[in-house]
Length: 606
Image (cartoon, rainbow, N blue to C red; front, side):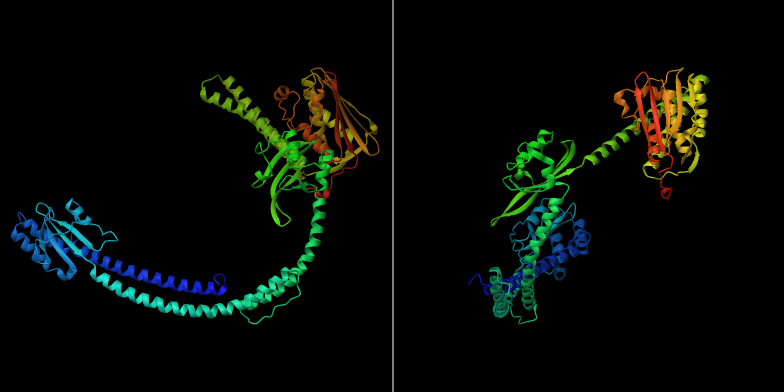
C-alpha cells in the first residue's frame, strides 16, 4: 500500500499543504515579532537617541544641576513622564532613570526602590557605551538604554515584556492550527480523487510495457482522454511501432559501422576490461604485421610502444588507469611517426556493462616532417636576422658611446651598419620570393627567347665579379641550344644564383665554364667550376633553406642561404629541376634542366 501511486499522491498533497501552512504561519508569527521589535526601537531612536528632543531636554536639566539630587531627579522624572505617550509606556513597557552605577532613581511603575535585572544592553551602557544595541533574539523582553549628560549623567532605561506580542501570536497560532486541520481534510479528499484519475491509465501503460518487454509489439493501448495521460498513451503506441523499426535498423547500421571501421586508414583497436582485443581493423593489423597474433593484448601494445621509446603516463599504466583521453605523441615505429590516443569505451558483457579501452593510432609522419621543417625554418630566420641586427646595434652603440671617435672609424661603423642592413633586406626579399613561390602568387612573364643570348647576358653581368677573384668565366656557346619558352628574368636569376655560388666558393684564379645544350624537348644549362667542392654529407641538403656548407665563408660573402632554394623552386615551377655533382676539393657541376615549353599554368598567374 505504502508503495502505491495512490498513497504517494495523497501523501505529497498532505505534506505540501501542511508545509505551506506552517511556512506561512511561521512567516506571520516572526513578522509580528519583528514588527513589534522594530517599532519599539524606532520609537526609542526618535525620542531618546542623541540629538533628539527628549534627549536634549534631559541633557539640559543635567547641565543645570550640580548632582543627581532630589530636585534634579524630580525634574527628570517629570520630563520623562510627559513623553509617556510617545515612548509607548504602559503596563507592559516601563521606563526607569538610573544613576551611572545602575541604581534606580525613578521608575514609571511608581516604585523607585524596584530592583531591575541588569541586561546585556544595560550593562553595556553602565560600562561606558553611549547607548545600547538591539536585544538578542530568544529573550522574553526587549530593552533600550541610553546615557545622558557629561559631568552629571544618568541612564534612561526602557524595557518591554512583550506580553502583548505573545498574546497576539498565540491567537494567530490557534487560527493557523485550525486552518491546517481544515486544509488537511480537503487535501486528503482532493488527493484521493486526483490519484484515482492518474493511476488508472498508468496501470494500463504498465501492462503495455510488460507486453513489449516480452517481445510482443503488436498490442495497441486504448486512448481514453486528451490530457497528458492520453498523449502519453498515444506516444506509447507510437513508440512500440518505432521501436520495432529501430531494432531492424540497428542491425543494418551495425553492418555499416563495421564496414567503416574496417576501412579506416587509422589503426583502431578496442580492448576489453581484462586487456583482450574486442575488435581491430585492417589498418592496425597491417601496421603491427607479424607482431599481431591471438595473444595480442593491451599490455602487448604498451610493451611495443615502450620498446620504441614511448613514455607512458605511469609505470603501472593499465586499462583501469584511463579516466579520460590519454595521448602518446611522436612515437617512431617501423619508420613511421605515430600518435596513439587512448579513450574509455562502454560495452556489454552478457547482462552487465563494462568499461574497456579504445586505442586510435594516427600516422602523422607527414605532419611531423612539416612541423619539424617549420620549426627549423623559424629558428633559421631568427638566427639569420639576429646576426646583422647585432652588428648594426653594436655599430650604433659604439658611435653613441664615443661621439668624438675619428671620422674614418665612424665611417667604418656606419658602412658596416649599412652593409648589414642591405644583408637583412636581401634576406627579407628572398623570403618574399620563396613565399610567393610556395603560395603560387608569383607574377610570371612567359616569353620565347634564345637561350644562348640569355646565358651570354648573365655571364656579362657576372664578369666583373669573377674578375675581382681573377676567375676565368667562360661561356661555351652551342648553336643547337635553340630557344626556350619561360620567364626569362626568373631563369636568369637561377643562373645568377648558381654561377654566383661558383664564384664565391672557387679559390681565386679558378675557371668557371657555362654551357647550354638541349634536345627536342628539354634544355640543359651546365655550370662547372674547379672550386672547393661540396662534402658528400652536405650534398643532399644544399637546396634546403638557410643551409650552408661553410657558414663563416657565406657570412663573409654576404649570402642569405636562400639562393639555391629559390633557384630550385623556380626550376620546379617551370617543370624542370636542378642536379648537383661534386667532389670535395675537385669542383662542382650544376645542371639546370628545363622543358622547352614552360609548364606554368598561366590561368593561375597573379
